[in-house]
Image (cartoon, rainbow, N blue to C red; front, side, top):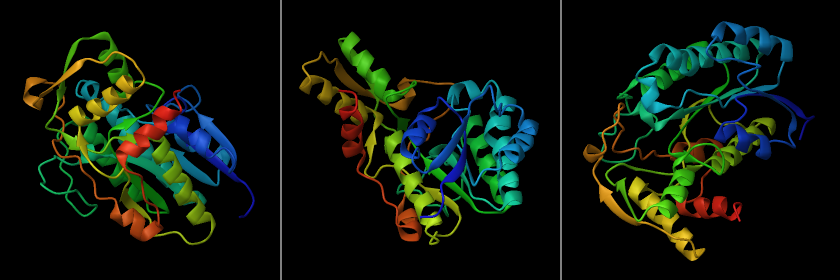
Length: 293
């Protein structure tokens, strides 16, 4: 491969950023900027930072991901999830460098019976999905070499996520009710980072696929209830206590933001265009948990 890269990563402590820092550390110099160095709630500050750093590649791993909270602070959600990605894309296009950005299954309303592909019309149900879709549109409008990677149900061994929350609650309680009618693919942040590295390597080798929007989740599918069951099975194998799980419908667990019932994303285009595929969600979960021991 060519000389080492100068990679600007926006976001420092999030799940995907943490995984990227591990996966990409030998590709060159990683310039990882947290909120103190690059505040995406102030999009007007981004251009000067990018031009000062002069990176070879920009990865935006920062986002406003508090889905329910976004309902009460839409201006902040749109600044971080929509306006800022658009500015990144404009700066990347001006420098003639690639820009990688992560989006979400929440751009869809969950009403489709089959898997969602990149040509399906988005119809977000809440502010979070609306802001992420606006970010996709701002990136597309900037032109340039951009990859928008839609993922879902992200978890890891850091931060706040379903895996860690379930591990705690399943050991603390005797019974636990979990939503069973929302279907998707739990996706380990490590899977996202590993796939991102493969995409970068394809680009460096001079054989990239088409730029644009792609779906990137683990393969297979389950419900939140099924995900919790799988987490509980591993606790039992490790000789730890585990609550009895009871499935409930989404209607029995109301939240400020409506969740899509069907979050299954078709990732075949990423395999077809870039030669990048993802592991089964359960296999990836076991790989993640192996790092916890």
